[in-house]
Amino acid sequence: MTRRLLMAATAVALAAVACGGGSGTSATPTPAPTPQTATFNETEFKIDPSITTFKAGDYTFTVQNQGKFPHDLHVATPDGSEVAKTDVLQAGQSGSVKVTLKSGTYTLWCAVDGHRARGMETKITVS
Image (cartoon, rainbow, N blue to C red; front, side, top):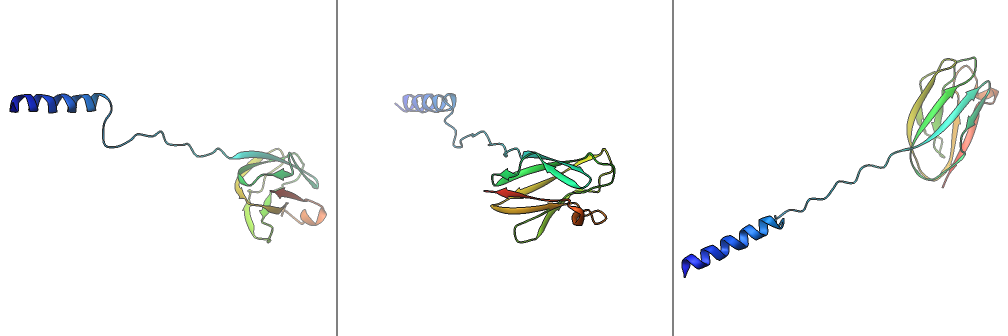
């Protein structure tokens, strides 16, 4: 009788292993969301965004200097806190910066040599 019990227990254990009856569950990890992208073309003395209305989330802002002078891009939250900026880009160069946007109106500008005062400023709306 003991031998039958041992054989039955072994059969149950083998069946559990064969059916994936381990103690843990294996779940495929969910990949992190890919940031959305937006392009900002800069010329003298204008910032031209590919879009101006955004949904809250993570973004990569690609900046292309299509002008003749150096430019950069600064990003400030609705309360005026600067959250991101690119390096100064020479004519023909491009760069990028990652930002996390929450609801509100953001201000973007070029801080090179008084360019902001000459009109290199734009606003984007995040909902």
